[in-house]
Length: 142
Image (tube, rainbow, N blue to C red; front, side, top):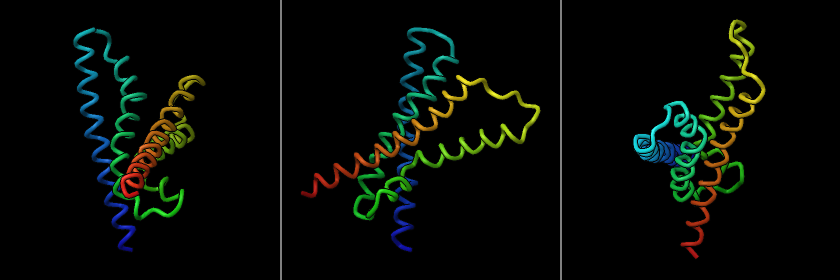
């Protein structure tokens, strides 16, 4: 039980670090927007698809580094990935709303593939960050 609580705390810490990194990267993206111009929609789409996975990658490195001694299996690396939980939540919400809300117009095929790809990118970047953090911890301890 103690190990699970430590892993949950480290996962939460990684999620907080991911959101801090996302905020810093988003501020940099807004600075670029103010310098070069363009519509807000394009930058928010780039933020959603590129900058948020990059924030997950950087913040999840902290999770992997701190949780490395407690993980024994590949499933453990998946479960401590901070990007898994928002990706699952958004995936479930989008699938359920497609069936529950009959008045909503479903997304066309390309937008739906883009959206599910973004959710997959959140998870994969988070998982990669956890694996990299664990790799650096093991490399340091050798």
